[in-house]
Every structure is written in C-alpha cells, then in structure tokens.
Image (tube, rainbow, N blue to C red; front, top):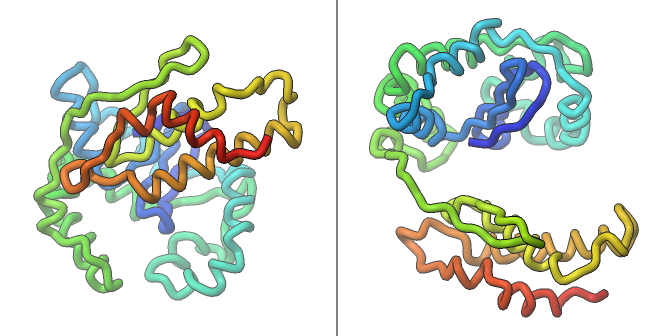
Amino acid sequence: MKYFKKQNLIINDEWYSSLIAFDGKSYYELGLGDFSELYLMARESSLSPDKYVKKLISSKNLSVFDGDIDESLKAYEKLIESRYLDFPNFKETWMQSGDTPKKGEIFKNLDLARTLEEISKTKRKSFYEGRLAKEIARFIKDQGGFLSFEDMSNYQSEWVEPVSSNYRGYDVWELPPNGQGIAALQILNILEGYDLKAMGLNSAEYVHHFVEAKKIAFADRAKYYADPKFNNIDIEYLISKEYAELRRKEINS
C-alpha cells in the first residue's frame, strides 16, 4: 500500500483499476490486493482497518478537486474523447456536471462510498468472495477481460522479505517482484556513480542522467520483473552494484 500526504480527496481511477482515496490526512492508492493486505496486517498488529475505511466514507466522498488532478484530466482530454466517453460509468462518475471536474469543484463518488462501506461491513469478504467480487468479475468479462470470480476468491495476501540496496550510506528497502519497487533501487545504483551535486539541480546534465537511468531500469522492469512463482528472476543481480556499473556504461555523459 502506498502512503503519501495529500489533500482531502477521494476518486475512483478508471484507468488503472485501482482506488485512490484521500481521508484528509493521508493518501492511499488501493489495488485489488490491498484490502486483503490491510486485514492481514491487522491480525499481526493493533491496526484497525475498519477505522481507516470508515474515515474514507465518512463524508460520502465529498471532495474538492486539487490542481494536480485537474491538470491530469486535461492531459488525458483527447484520450477521454476518443476512448473513455463510451466506457461504462465514465460519464456518470467523472462528468456529473457535463464536463470533467475542475480545480476547486466539489466532487462526489457515492458508488465508491457504498463499495467501501460494504467492504468494511463484511471485513473485506464481499470484495473477494461475495457480491462485489461477482460484480467485478462480471464487469471484466463483459469488457473482454480475463479476471474471474475464482481469481478473486482464490487471492491470498502473503508476507514477503523486502530487499535493499545501499545508496551513499543509506539502506533503501523495497518489495521484490511481482511488484516493481526494485526499479527504484536500480536507478539509485546507477546514479550513485555520478556527482549529481556538481551537475546542479535540474540542469540539463542532471536531468539527462536521471532520465537515462530510469529508462534502463524500466526496460529491465518490462523484460525481467514478473511473479517469481512463474519466472526465475535473479533479483540480487539486478539490484547489485556490479550490474549497475555494467548498465551505467550505456549512458553518454
């Protein structure tokens, strides 16, 4: 689960099949597995998942759009016109006033509020084994997708060991694949070989090296990162200093 400080906002992101929610203090991006993980962590700690879910629905998702979201929607404007206007529920959710929400505009997503409420009341079971799971599977099938009710009901969260790399004296930890967190470690390992301070913040040289390091890591992400249950991935080598030195030679300085 990703955790950032942001404004009070709750939206349903159609593009990435995840829930993004702001409870006034914290920002959560909730993927399909995160409700399971939230309740799994609760069993191992004093965490009360219902408290956080209830915070998200307490205002019935009454929100004020901030500038970042407004700009994101503008960037997708042409894509919205060509692809999403005919997408089920898009207009009802995102164009309640006839247009996409603007900065400062009040926004409600009552369907998302009811979904979160049902998840809380059923202790996540509806989302994986009950009515919500069946509705998700039906919708995905209707859209030509492959996620099934059996996929939802068979999902189990699991504890995994994090991996780390040292960047200039700091140990940086990430979750291994099947996530993509180790891309950050690869980027840091590559950048460690440069004097970024001497380049100057946001200088052409600075940006060039950051972009190229990211391109290398993301190319590896596309080629190698996968569920380790179905693919043999040498994670230790990918996040090693040795490998970073090899890939760093591909960047023109």
